[in-house]
Length: 285
Ligand code: URA
Image (cartoon, rainbow, N blue to C red; front, side, top):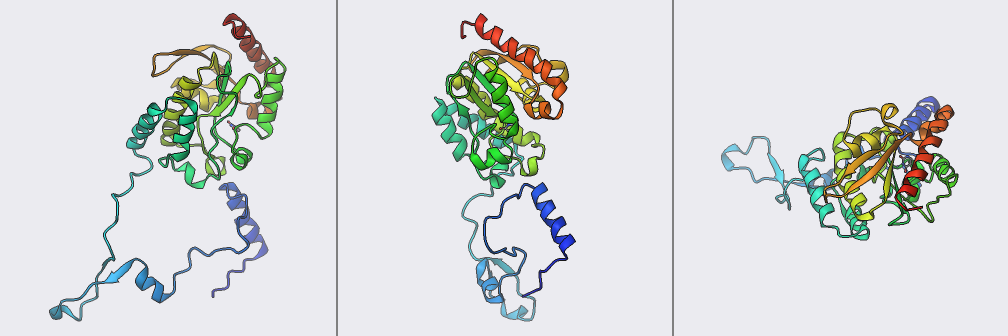
């Protein structure tokens, strides 16, 4: 076996790189060298079979072909617009939130699912007056399978508590993405578009009185705008859904941003007061 030992500095740098890529937990006692070649005998039988060479060309190199034809058609590339259509179609078929959750959990068309530990669908009360839509699960959410359970989620809980609302009673919480992007990288537009098909249906089925969009990425995706969060925050927009319904939506800063920039909490407090006022106007508080 080859010697895989690394100098301590190199090993530390490699571990740091793994963590940056989102590989932040060991799941086995023994490391598996996935680059190691299989033993020769296994290699010959694993996936290829030598073809019988015609007598006249017996000395020519032996071509190889697959042992059996591929059983199904090639998978659709994970950046294909077809996947967005598939997601829209699957989402449309769900007639309630439980069916939509099952459909999201069964959906294999988003590349992020391959690297995530859990599908993070929602938390809180289905049918609550306020639906919060954030960006994407982080490491804590990925591990626990619930949105906004890390430090930024805890700040969000305290903020809503200040206007007498909690996820146990009056909030329903989700993200535009159901799977953690590896290393918290920015999701591609294709990944966002696929998940957004489900998220838009999620809002239709959960029927909140209003939606709070937390952070620029959620705002851009859900309101389909290129305008930045600094311009849009605190201004009510109307979210038009595919079933013809309309919901008031308030863009606000992401709690992770507030942790980095505490001075902006003042503006978020105004946003919370605006939510409180809107709920009262709508007779939902
Ligand atoms: N940030 C988000 O946008 N969503 C979560 O669930 C956690 C952190």
